[in-house]
Image (cartoon, rainbow, N blue to C red; front, side):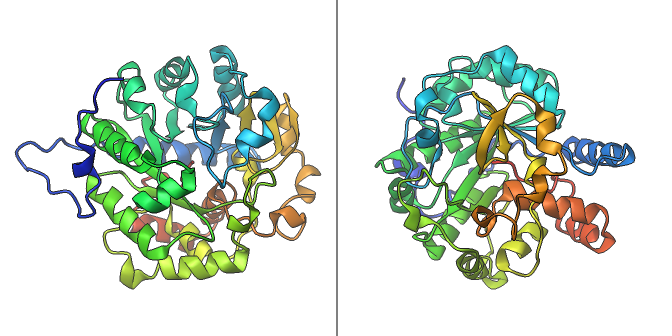
Amino acid sequence: MGAAPYPLVQVIKREVPVKDKDTEVKRATRPVELSVRLAWYILRNRLQGRSRFPLVTMLEPLEMCNLACVGCGRIREYRPVLDKMMPVAEALAAVEQSGAPIVSIAGGEPTIHPHIDQIINQLVARKYFVYCCTNALLLERILPKIPPSKYFCWVIHLDGMEAKHDESVARKGVFQKAAGAIQMALDQGYRVCTNTTVFRNSDVEDLREMFRFAGGLGVEGSMISPGYDFKDAPDQDLFLTRQESRAVFQRLLDPAKTQGMRLYNNPLYLNFLRGDREYQCTAWSNPTYTVLGWRKPCYPLADGHTQDLGELYQEELWEKYGVGKDPRCSNCMMHCGFESATIFQAVSTPKDWVTLLKSGAAHKGGISVA
């Protein structure tokens, strides 16, 4: 890997970077086409009488990672198949089977996959809206293989400023690498978001500083969600209860203190995190395809895997899962299950839809994906 073209000590300064108006690169933005196609997709499925259908295909073409984040259970859950790489044709077939207009590629660390560029480029050619979640350690190497496109967005993991993020990923220097990669990708014309997981040891003031820092770099927005207590994660004390999550987000999202924070999540979901709203999980809207097949029932929980996507949409399956049904769901507030719930309710609730329109979330698609 060549020398980084951006002096990292400049990129990670805590002040918002000052840009030269004469040399500033126009930042890529979220395309309006995303909201139009998503709205039409939802309407078409409702007109066909479908009450449950995918909004986002979660694609995990590998489970191997180059980090061992303390709040992640994936690399431990999939330990027996960490060396397995999903063939390109299989990945594309899973996305086609789902039919959702949005694809979120995660894992594992997607940029380790030897053919991730082929997967992304072919999905973009088919005009799916693709979001690739990454820790950015290998981003410089992969950028030349994936051209910028309105259909593609990097989602870069940041759990805080330098000390807190490096603690979260259990390795020093990762924040500097991620910050440099964000700047590099933005300057090359890519759409870029960040993704943050909130844990019990997260610091609210540090998170606010990080969100302002990311916004100052020019990202589209920062996705945020409480962590899920994956049973295979090494430190179970990290995870917040539902009551603790609400207390943290009431402080973090205090309207008097959010100036300069560019959050990607829609306002209905943020209100839910604060405890102002209640929703039942709609995790079926984010089916997750892995090297073992579709996780059943959802992204956080895998009581099994199946090759038949239809099994995830059987009525009797969802009689067993969700808040108040399965104790493992009691503290879950992840956006993969609840941000989609806000969209489905807004479609049939004019007041909620007006809230999305006023906030601008409707034209952004109204849903985060990581």
